[in-house]
Length: 154
Image 1 (cartoon, one colour):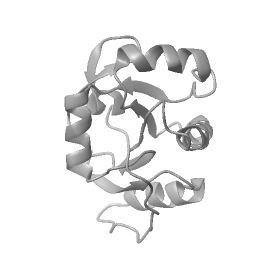
Image 2 (cartoon, helix red, strand yellow):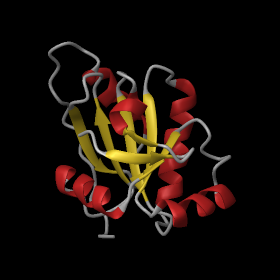
Image 3 (cartoon, helix red, strand yellow):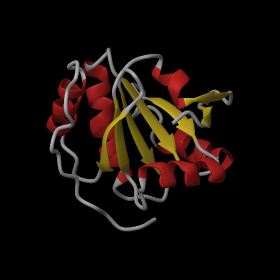
């Protein structure tokens, strides 16, 4: 899924470009989400350890609204992740593509950009992401049976 997002430096880019041919863990979140900071913090800690994986934080709020909030509250806390923002149209396309209605929502893609698995980021443990990344790194691998809990709509 190669939709245009706005990088944290204000330039238009795509998730594919931000991923740069690496497997990726993409966290979709909003500034209004009470559960999102915990998920972002866990993924940020993993990003510090996993240099071969792109960790992308895509805020689903309008960049003009979200960027100041991110800067004010947490940009230093999630410095190991690459940040981007999605406008309303792109947000709706992401939601339709992966079928999500709540945040935080995490998507793992392999190095070819194929969706490996996706689901709620609330309560997500690093071991679950590591298992998925290990499985998607193997040639001709099958998707692991990793269950995600569902959360409230946003």
